[in-house]
Image (cartoon, rainbow, N blue to C red; front, side, top):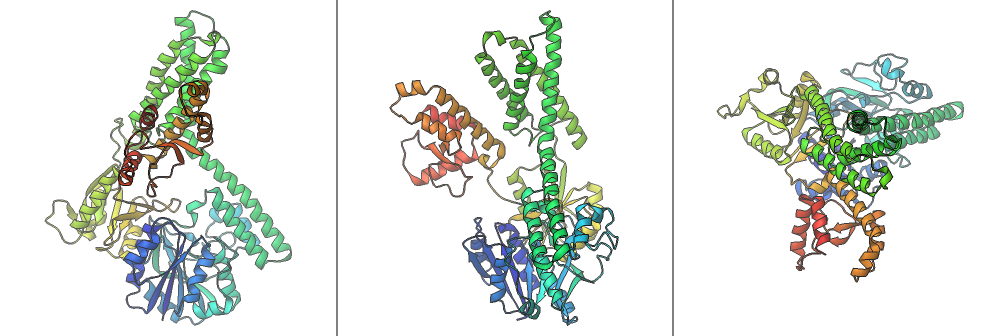
Length: 637
């Protein structure tokens, strides 16, 4: 056996499917075996592999054992002269393995080898080759000198930026996303260190291979697509913690004395620095628009108050409570209600904005009515404030829309012009997929060297760059049954990252891609949209639960008088603590968005007790959820 391919999978079913298709193609002329080690996925990965790829050896773990241990399980069972560790979110070209093995055969001292990796945009991933993370290298990386001077032999050692990425080189460290190893080298230096749960194990193994007298190589004559890239989660606090803790383990294992202390100090400093940056960056991304609009709302109300004092009430000023109580809670309620409707996720959906403002004014009037009479200053400001805020936010969002889409029409949001490199049949499949997602696309047609008589045929493959320029295309989808992975990577490199790229494997209904090395990999396919899968609807459900729970607690004496049930207060407390929801599913609902156990369920107001009916009812509930769905069940109980 020449080659053993080992893929560790955890809940990336659709990426794994595409990866396996490319691996099997690349192995056609090579004596090989393929292992998939599944770390307790819940997305149907195991069933998919067994169904679509019966020749693949599947190892199923009942828990997430981590990257190192899972790889070792397969390596111990492998029989290949070479072992390849491969991430599931990758695609390999058809001739990748044959080129790599030929290169390895020409280098008797080669212990491990990596390749040039590009992300879903065709952008080179610098983690394809790395230097040993000594205290000096770690320090330069921590303070950012490696980014300021990437090609410097002194400061750019972490990613070896001074080495030409298009040439072969001896290197210190390889990436575990694609790491070909000679089995003899592994037998000598040992398998992956299972102390590393995730991250760092590839650095440790690369270092041990060189310490054992073998050589690591970066091979530039073939490329792979690695959708997520090393920097996928660099703005995740959890990533920062796990990655840098792995570096501490590495230092404890391989360094001693002053180097060990210095390295550990630098790593711990990096943890807090990076975690702080991650928290600040994520907060800014999520909160900048709500915060800015809160300022706009407060400013609008303030100027309205000033106008009301002078021209309507003819008074010098309202009591100070207007500024310390009323305007702040008006602003807070409107901001929260606009956020709860999902308006900040869909800022150009006018209906969500109006809905948020409408819900907000109702809550404001309710709170206003509960305040003592001495704090009842003016309902007019609330009512005219509603109109003013609507106008201000509509104008503000129109400006943003114009900057982004070059149009003042909020309904005009088609900023993605897409084409397919593939067949007429595949184009029709992709069109159906896009329509099922209701995405803002204009799928203009397809490019290939046949099907010239079809009305949506745009031209031949060698005209692709010209077609993209003429039609101002934003997105290209490659069908692997029409164009090779190697040609796909070449085209991505030629066109550059200004265009978004996706691929759709042969005999697959899922389109896969990534918009940058800083994004998670993306996939989409034919599906039924479920409201309860969307954050804004889950937020609305939670707000309804809280409101009804508080309402129930306030009126619990009346409920006890007119109801035989004595559990109102207990149920309300469980809902407040998120242990329960007022309305849950009537069935097991394994394939639906998770909900806490319901005080009542979707079938509580019906007399039917049929499991199939309950499943259908839950599906409809999840798909069409609104607050009225819950209210309807509660009012009929």
